[in-house]
Length: 392
Image (cartoon, rainbow, N blue to C red; front, side):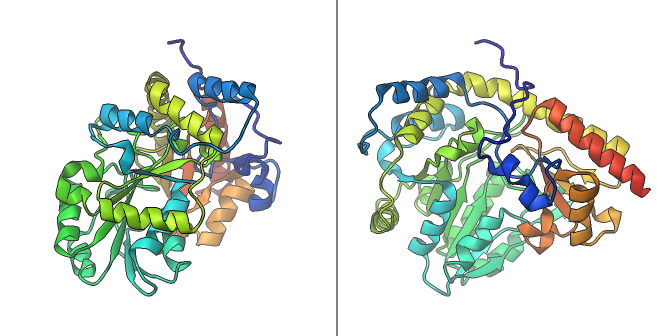
């Protein structure tokens, strides 16, 4: 395969990109360098582009058949990449993982029911629960020397009267790739408390050397029976704007409950471009991903080294997965609003505010390093200058 240059800078301004074109609305200036929302700045694999171009060349975009969703390719990918044996008939189409989260909450719980999440965590976990009139129960992750772990004792106590646990695996924003042992312990608590697990595994392909993603549902039939797994090609292949994902549910009764709500909400239809891209990505995207992963790993190492050397009061640990870095800025002594202003107005770099991931994220910021080295270098240069100007 031809070597891919992920360092090519593609101008995404004026392309309708929320990341780039809405930065001025979010941060108050057009010259803010946006490293926030979790999409990357890389073009999709050539196989995906070819599939989309072929679909455009066909010229007819009528209603798609549900038999052509690309789920055979997804099943092959899950087996090859993650040693998880699945079947296309276990899969339900969804416009996106965020949509699937809300539908699962509606399907698997009733108003007022308790739903466990593990903050600091992706903000839509909170909204999927609260906007559907359910009750958030926080099983906060425990930081130890910058690396987070699950508080299993607290989880066991809270699981007793909860209905659902939403798991982020790999974890956004802290970058943990949960081990098989950790996942088995979590599943044992769920099984003993009749707790269903909704596992968001959208970042599962983005894992670095020394770590391995384990699909929760691959750990045994008893665990699979209580697990609803959300996957998508969006993060891996940078096709989030095509709004195509799959929900994998091996248990027939559980799958029917979920599919019935999808049907009731008239969300059964797929997008012809999304399905074509999903199939091409999962059939032919492996070699592309094998080049992307070392590039991202090098970006992460570069980021950690420079922050450690030049802005030592901002602590950054090497993520085990995802293209997101979790910056511990508490030593700067700034409140959340002042911290946001420091990055956006003084450094002119647009990051995610840590407290949007829960109170446990107070004093933190999230940085997306899924970009060219030149863009990442410019962002770190800006942060370093602002840091030095402040005399931190």
